[in-house]
Image 1 (cartoon, rainbow, N blue to C red):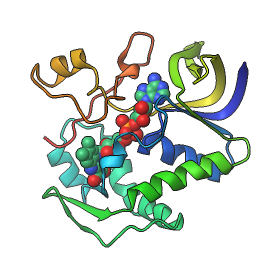
Image 2 (cartoon, helix red, strand yellow):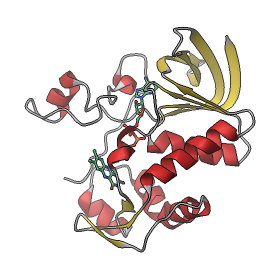
Image 3 (cartoon, protein in one colour):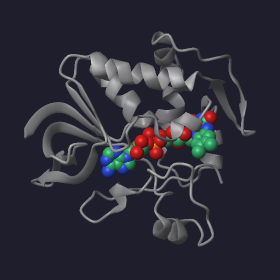
Amino acid sequence: MTDAVDLLVLGGGMAGLAAAARAAQDGATVVLAEKAPRTGGSAEYAGFIWTAPTLEVMRNINPDGDPALAERLVDGFPAAVEWVRSLGVDAKEPVTVLGYGRGRQTDMPQLLSTCERIVRDSEGCELLLGAESERLIVQDGRVCGAEIRTSSGELRTIDARFTLLATGGFGGDAELRAQLIHPLASAPRTPGSTAISFRPGWPPRTFTSYGS
Ligand SMILES: Cc1cc2nc3c(=O)[nH]c(=O)nc-3n(C[C@H](O)[C@H](O)[C@H](O)COP(=O)(O)OP(=O)(O)OC[C@H]3O[C@@H](n4cnc5c(N)ncnc54)[C@H](O)[C@@H]3O)c2cc1C
């Protein structure tokens, strides 16, 4: 079966859910494919929406990070908080986080479920659970969708104008963990972080460190 949508989101953690919900609100047709039986990813352990308070602090903490992404994150933070509040989700007054950051304690389960509901309820949008993306479709050097193994075992091809890789990190992959962190690094609480986007056939990734 082949579909064509504006946006295909691979991974239904906080990043994928927020992007899918926002695009759906803006009228885009969206398919969000999450391989786990439920959405949320590692955000189910998180309590704060936060980042560095200024670009200078961000550069000091994370000198190898992508400058454009850093700017987007720091400068976009107030608008992101406004958007979360516009969904009716509680985001409390700013406090210091991990010694250098500024953040707001946020009702994360409510935020996750609200984003999920927006995707489910928006016309032309679809949420697929238990649906693992297996391969990106690349034509003329451009990613234009992916093949998804649905929960029923069907291989579904989804063509999309834009494809967002939001499949999280590599912590659940023992080999990459040993190679990129430390041979004794322990497995994360999120076994779903199996690094699909690091495998052959997927676009190159840049690493940004999370603190030190
Ligand atoms: C204990 C703990 C506390 C934290 N506290 C905070 C906090 O207070 N504030 C904060 O900002 N951050 C916090 N973090 C970090 C934050 O939770 C993560 O950075 C964030 O949730 C990552 O979201 P993500 O969507 O990028 O990735 P993930 O949450 O990893 O989501 C990726 C999703 O993609 C799915 N997936 C993977 N491969 C595929 C595939 N092939 N096809 C389809 N789906 C796939 C996975 O199942 C998963 O659901 C915390 C992390 C932990 C572990």
